[in-house]
Length: 105
Image (tube, rainbow, N blue to C red; front, side, top):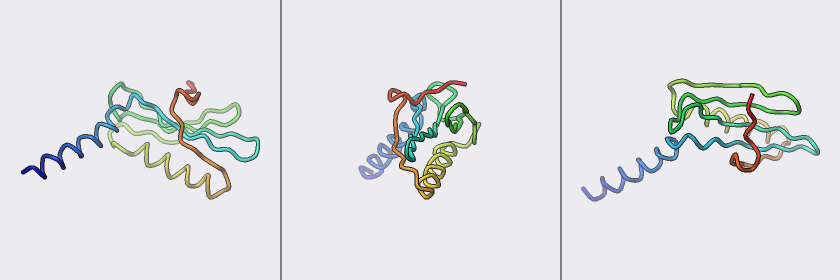
């Protein structure tokens, strides 16, 4: 029973990471002097959905993916896109909004 309690606490802890979705984050990807930003944006306070994945480069801000009901979809899409960027030679690092990632439409 104690093990189940610990497992439940750990599971809820990991879910709370997603549920505090008010914490938008992104990835800065650089290649030479060029910068690309991939953002995960949560559209409702304290909820992981709805969400969007935005791609920002130079003077454009494009919504690549969005989810209304599927928790984890935006995060997975963003991570996969970052891996593609890295495969193309870009150097990417995760950043929080306080690092200047929050770009509004």
